[in-house]
Length: 171
Image 1: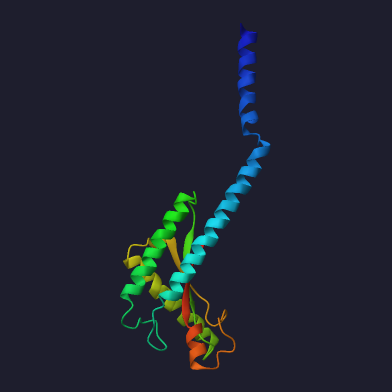
Image 2: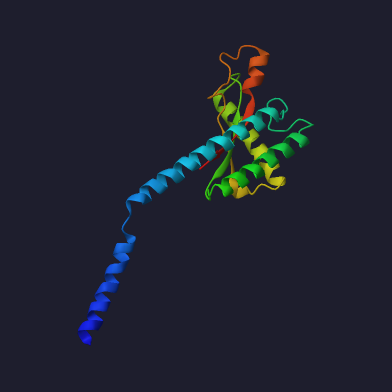
């Protein structure tokens, strides 16, 4: 009887290690899941980029103060983030962060531009949080003139294109 109990105990100890061993399909499942997440991330980022382009708010010159008339645009941006959250959840993505990046033109001091772009991105974050986006899900980043859309920005129209904010999701 003791021998039988010992055999059962030993076999029970061996079971967890067998169960913990990876099947050859585990890596395939993970790769498929990663590919699915990558596809969802690209799709969500395309939508967020488009919404940010369509819904740019202006700031008073040299400040992070929003110019009048942005309420409807900010509402659309918040709705885009809510839709993005739904897509991410449906795809099984549990950890993500939305990023609002602020950008400036190349006029003036680079350090001041970087600081101003961060303040402007933070102003957008604040507005999105006021419209229901969780503060823990969104962050602000100031990039100054580091990633211009147009080079050189030597006309007022080109400078205006570089003064912007962008929305992205980071998984």
